[in-house]
Every structure is written in C-alpha cells, then in structure tokens.
Image (cartoon, rainbow, N blue to C red):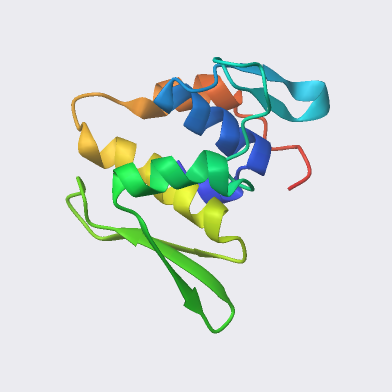
Length: 124
C-alpha cells in the first residue's frame, strides 16, 4: 500500500487500528477517537500521540534540506525511509510500513484497508 497517498485522517485511523490505541472515528469531522479517554488521536500532528510510537518502534527523524526524513531498520528486512514536510506524518508512514515487514505471515494491509476504508477522495 502506498501510505503517502493517504490523508492524515486515514493514516491516524490506520495507526490507531494497528496499535489498538484508537479504533473509533468520525469521518465527517476527520476525527480519530482515543479508546481510553475519548480524546482526539492525531499522531500525524501531535508529538504526544506520536512520540511513544516513534520511541517504541525505533524510528529516527532527521531534518533534510526540504522537509524531514523518518527511517528505521528495526524489525524490517530492508531499510525503510520516507521523506515528508511533516516529520510526524513521515514517522507514522514508516511505522505502518514496519508492520507489514515485521510480520510477513500476517497481512496488516487488510486490517489497514478496512480501517481507512480505502477512501482516497478526501482532501489531503
């Protein structure tokens, strides 16, 4: 799956689904809801939401000339790296890519496809 084509809402929804952190959403408001307290879950834009995922997953974020690069080797067969203007979005894309590489017998793609609803018509 090309996660770079997904909106922040779709990535947040997929990350919430994979981590179990947030499995509810309200598409009309592009809102992913945290299971534990009902607050917004927005790892593409919140260091408080993304930080623990980045740390636990061993994802590194580094500045580039034009934006940011997130990368990891942890749990992957290959080096995984994504560049984006938003460092947290890049890190969450790397996190989702890691899930596919970490468990070759398990396909998170079906789970993620169901989570995001494969709706790419939304504004990014």
